[in-house]
Amino acid sequence: QSVLTQPPSVSAAPGQKVTISCSGSSSNIGNNYVSWYQQFPGTAPKLLIYDNNKRPSGIPDRFSGTKSGTSATSATLGITGLQTGDEADYYCGTWDNILNTGVFGGGTKLTVL
Amino acid sequence: QITLKESGPTLVKPTQTLTLTCTLSGFSLSTGGVGVGWIRQPPGKALEWLALIFWDDDKRYSPSLESRLTITKDTSKNQVVLTMTNMDPVDTATYYCAHRLSAQNYDYWGQGTLVTVSS
Image 1 (cartoon, each protein chain N blue to C red):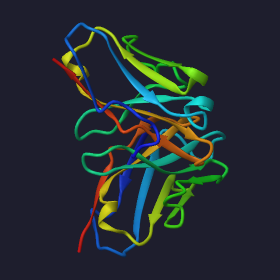
Image 2 (tube, rainbow over the protein chains, first blue to last red):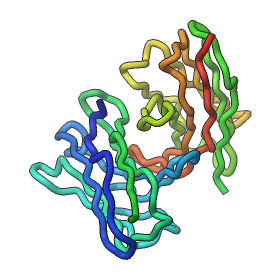
Image 3 (cartoon, helix red, strand yellow):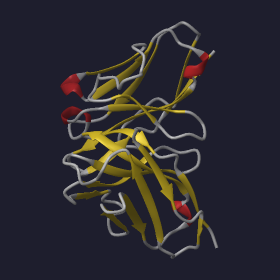
């Protein structure tokens, strides 16, 4: 059971937009930055979004991150203009101040139909 | 260019101690602000954060594994070493080391090394 809750899977058609949610609490998302990672089978995760909404160099602006909700305890990854090459697993991550540990979501498998 | 590479045994027996080495290139752990973390991923499962070491030798551990983990650095070799005692089959996973960009953000990852725990 992950500290951060993500939907197991999402799907959308090519060219469409999809959002992936990451729900936590005040001890993690509510008071810390959120990062998002993309992982293809058999490869290491790749940083897509850091500090809630910043993109590392080389990450296209089709990828965006937001943090919202009551007391900002949820974060969302948005992907526009979906491509078949976006099919991957996506993970959110942050720090938890009570557990005093890094935490990740359970991951979301994106299918581009 | 920042790269990280994990090395260590691919197979360990239950109760043995695992020692993994992360060799760093393109940055130094003696530089202020730098951190290197370890994250693992059991086959088909989610990422699990394990430990983090900073340039000033400050360390953080996953509370659930803290009694079994030790993270150290060798600045002269530009390496970070993770040891995990009393290995169990449930510890079978791909172990990654990663460069900490800031906070809990990891921007460069090693390729990972699959460690299987089996007798």
